[in-house]
Image 1: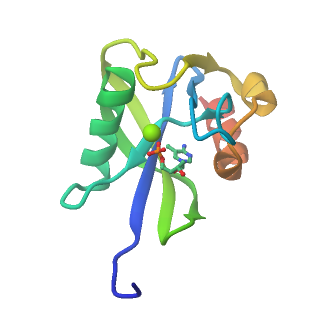
Image 2: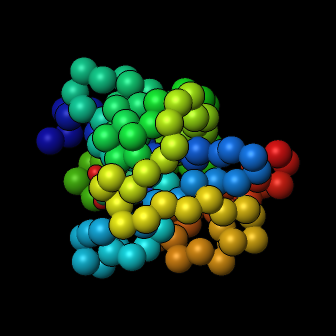
Length: 133
Ligand code: 9L3
Ligand code: MG
C-alpha cells in the first residue's frame, strides 16, 4: 500500500462574471443535497488537467481550460488527496448531467451555501478570489 502513488481527486473552481459554479451532489446519502466544486477521480495515465477536463465534460457537458491550483490539499480516506483548480469555460453551458442541480454564486451566497465538508477548506480562498475578480 505505501508504494502506491497518491490518487488525486480534482475539483473545479469554475469562475465566470465574478461568480463560482456550484453543483449539488446526489450521493452518497451523507452528502446528497450538499453543494461541491464539480470534479472527480483522476484515472491512471491521465494528468490532473486531462482528468478534470474529462470529468467536467461528463458531469456538466462543457469544454474547459484548466488553470492553476487554488487552496490547500485536502486528505481523503484510502490514500486519496483532493485538490482544487481554477477553471474557465471554453464552450457550452454547465448542465447538471450527474448532479441534481447547478448554480452560480457570488461571494455572499458562497459563504452561506451548504458546502460538502471537504470543500469548506477552500472557502476563504474562493471568497477572496471572487472578491478580487
Ligand atoms: N469530493 C469532494 N469534494 C469535491 C469532489 C469533486 C469530490 N469537490 C470527494 C467525494 C468522494 C470523492 O471525492 O468521496 C470522489 O469524488 P466523486 O468521484 O464522487 O465526484
Ligand atoms: Mg464527481
